[in-house]
Length: 157
Image 1 (cartoon, rainbow, N blue to C red):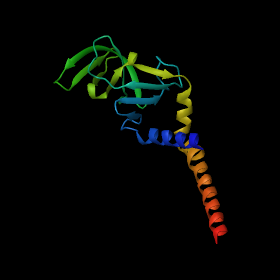
Image 2 (image 1 turned 180 degrees about the horizontal axis):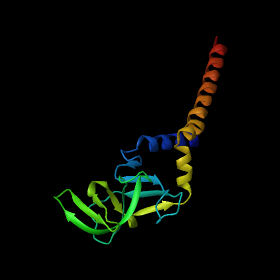
Image 3 (image 1 turned 90 degrees about the horizontal axis):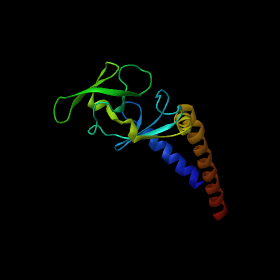
Image 4 (image 1 turned 180 degrees about the vertical axis):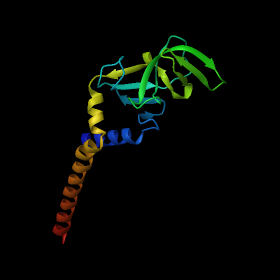
């Protein structure tokens, strides 16, 4: 029962930590399921620490995808960096696109993937998965415990 409770808490926290880009972030760490990145195996759970300061030309980076709806995270190689001010940089990618440093997550080399766990997280964090594996079983346990409580209260009378 304790393991199930831990599972429910972790999954719920994962869902509550979604940022505006639709990926889960806990402080500086970004956690997401890989669907479209070629550098990691499909279905991996990717964890990367956000770092937009220590980048240079030639680095392979991960960034939030705002160009199209094919995945929330994309990868690219830096072709040029233009410093706008102390906080902001404009990054030119090798594919000819420009990227604000506010959309940059970090270097690909600082990310690591856990194979196949991304598939599991994707299913569990879906609406139907959360309903099936969290809401429904928790409701059943709640009513079971409530029934036990009523039986004990009747026994005390």
